[in-house]
Length: 191
Image (tube, rainbow, N blue to C red; front, side):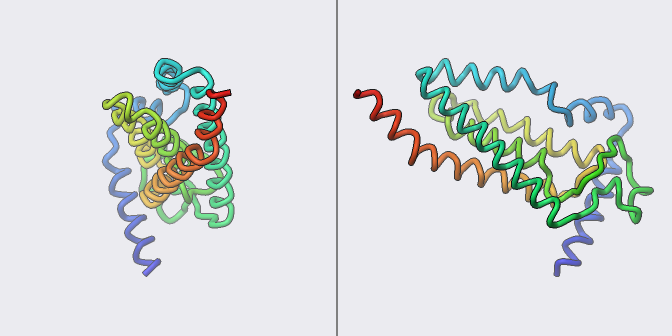
């Protein structure tokens, strides 16, 4: 069963990666990097301070940062335990694919997918009652994660599992925020 899934994953990757068109290489090579997305993070931080009291906004941002450290650590540990080669380093398929990036390290699961989906899911959970359009922020993790297939460094399952880990981590940190931080913030208002 696992062999069939991995075979499908490799075939799906080769197919999706082969859809790449040279005219879009610059776009996807830019989308896959972190700096172009900095304006999005500035907007998100601004929205926290616009819609919440300063102290609550700071605790939300702190929760986001702690979650990013957790997700990054979990991703790195999983990559080293599973030790799955990236497509660009897999000698069986790397001559069949378009490679725009050549990182070393392992593939499973995608840190781009886990980190971006965790951040945006937590942001959506925090802001969904204040802004109905906040779901549009999911454009970032979708593009960010899909760019990894385009540039030749992640299989589809790496992306799917990374996204699921990110969403679950965000939900878990949102619940922890509600249990541990929100009661503290509410009680400190009455002091």
